[in-house]
Length: 433
Image 1 (cartoon, rainbow, N blue to C red):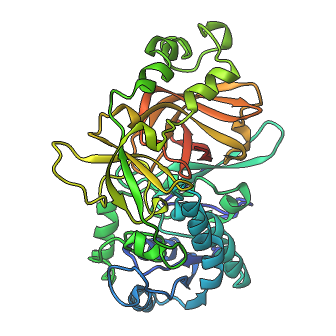
Image 2 (spheres, helix red, strand yellow):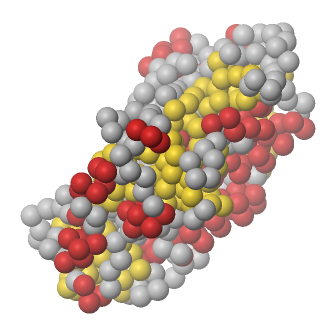
């Protein structure tokens, strides 16, 4: 049973359910609410206030006030009650403080993933249950399916949205089975133009409203200014690493070595068909990031703090006069140094593998867990909207390793890697380094 534009209750009772929907003031949640009501369910709107501080924001004095007005207009149009809950303290403690801590460590967090795991499907879910909710709905473009295992257990599977341009399953990659059990995604089986059309046909105030951008519930920000609420600016040097850096040739495993570690012909294969199985040491070497010191490159400029920058970043350096753009290859918050390279083909931007620490591995589908010492092929993305990449996943005592068929650009510590089996998002984890 797939839960997207249509759904049922866990006990297979298809009668009216009480559904609390997170009305955000956007078109997606508005249409989701309309769909739920059309299907005969009791719908209750719940608007979250998660952020009051406007430091560093680029648009508006208090964007959530505008969002609330639109949520109220939609609730009035649909004739559903709307409750308002202030979750700003939880949001600051569980999402924003985490952001600051990760940037301070020189890592790049994904607050949208954390917001879904910690707020929308945790704190918000608990508020919805206080209202007697059978389910909690959002406007995410994804779907869920129910499956029964041979031992009789029910498993909830997270599926990609039907619109390939709007699929948001990646942002839900940290949800648990308990969270998925309550979740509904009414627009997951629709295309975005269909959602806009429905909103216009129903006269919803959000029909022509632009999609929100930037940090979840905070909006578009000047990131260095935003982070300076807790992280002090600190002048440091920018060092350029040339493509001819000797360690690129010496430390990067030969291309045929990477090929030898892949299953022949692609696709899922058994261990007996694999030409060779990488050792733990080989996996660690393939997943290791490039490490530079200030002696490896020439100083070409200055910056205001290494913790304000991220691997793969192109803008914000303020260094011009180049044929191609400069990209950040690495940051060192201890030395307060940034290392850059010219052009997106620079070898320092590319790596064949990544590692996820044992405590950071999360399986959305418990029936798909790869046991320690095992491996399996999946399709993987390391950032939202990235096309899925062919890869093999290895589970070892030192962590979970993902070895890609093709080297990946901008593998960034702190971001989430998510792996898929067909259209199902099976698991995810935080990239270690």
